[in-house]
Image 1 (cartoon, rainbow, N blue to C red):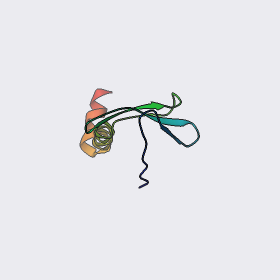
Image 2: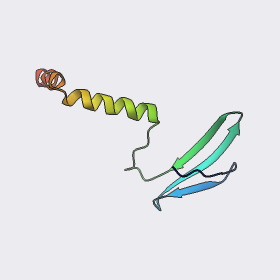
Image 3: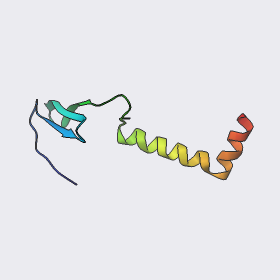
Amino acid sequence: MLALTRRKGESLVLNNNIEVTILEIRGDQIKIGITAPKEVPIYRKEVYLQIEDENKAAIHPDGMEALKKLL
């Protein structure tokens, strides 16, 4: 893991086309802004993990049967 120190208003760039900017620091919370192309999906980690779990459940044999019933 790369750990960087940034102040309010400072940014970092990922992969030449994604910019992450520190917008606000208040106590133990940090507000960040992300500028990225529309085709780049951006999720909070807890949401991403839920999506992953749902995808895994959909390919589980029981999940496949449920999908077949929908069709």
